[in-house]
Image (tube, rainbow, N blue to C red; front, side, top):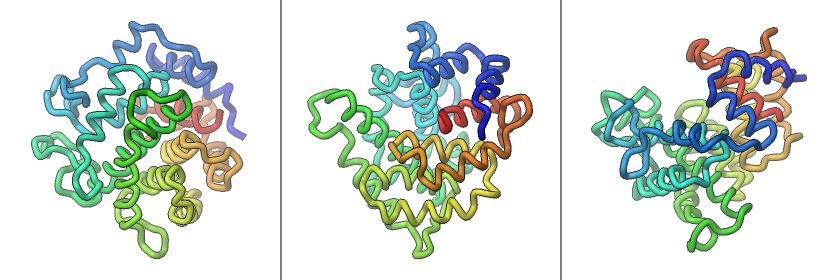
Length: 273
């Protein structure tokens, strides 16, 4: 079993003010202060996205999705900043249903978001479609956010899901990063493309024993976020992996360095709460 109390203690001891506010929202739905939310939203470009480089003026699909994940942990996806970002994200979808970074970001983009790279294109499509799926899911739960019937991004997500489905191989694998699998499975689940989602989850379950803690946490948190049942076998396997990799200090190790251990631990808390 995952020791959630120890994980909470790790975040309290090692996190900053934003991390602790994310923890309070995840634990008890406690709304952060307006000042803290303003800080979390800082740097947004006029067109609605967030830049890949601090202070930059070109919005990035990857950076915007990362910021939306942080804002989601603060209960802030309904605020104007996140709404503008989601609208910008939807507007960046290409005619074939996919997303790609602007050519101007070629030098600044990490490998998984590099313009012109087919693996990066699939990753950006999966992560953008995931956050637009979450936005529409929240809209249906809370009532219409605006005049658009059925959620503002339903058509965008449907087109993206078709593009992602076309990339699935007969054995359920996909030609891109591991994260594309669980993000696509989450999108397919909400699109009622259950066969496609199940094929991916079989592959993920087979790989679970070797998945790093950060990926296990991200996988489980993503599937939980779109309403996959807590006792679903993929989530059970992910929690088992997290239980086996939790450190004695209550946290989990990030592949990106110890500075991101708190981020990984917050994802594990979201996955297991």
